Image: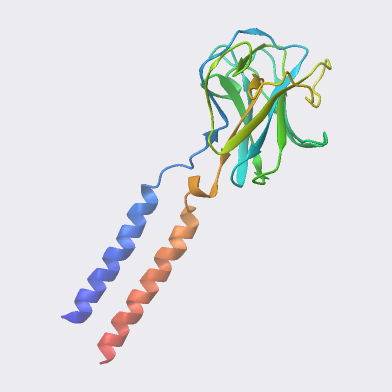
Length: 217
């Protein structure tokens, strides 16, 4: 009876892994800025608006976004970028107008190839579009939170009438909105299905080896 019991256990193990694969949650993208109530609404043009920040953990940016005043998205496409503090543009994307963007809360996002940010390094995000803008934790109020995985250093903006490095600030440890981003950390990702499939095959192989050994006794 032992070989049968081992075989049943092996099948149960593989089944459990397969069920786990089918019930895994989607990757948990987190937002850098979560607005509860936007601050004063004003025209964002001609400014590139954003903030300087430092990741508290290593992370990967998955989408760049810009503030939208309505759930209908941007009236016209906008541009969002990430710079280092020397003004080198590291990553940028065009956020499409209307419902073509991924609209979450008060922001319209566009996915990017995952881009790694290093913990403890300062970066600046900024967005340029011709629509409305707002703020969080500045003199124009706004309520909400910054993700605990980042430390916000200061608001940043530029006055160039085009998408450009936002390297001016008003001294607030807040953000002109402006830019936002979605990201993942090592703790917010789950194994890919292919990885779990390999694990299942490996466990099945171990179980079948045990079965053969017991039958040879």
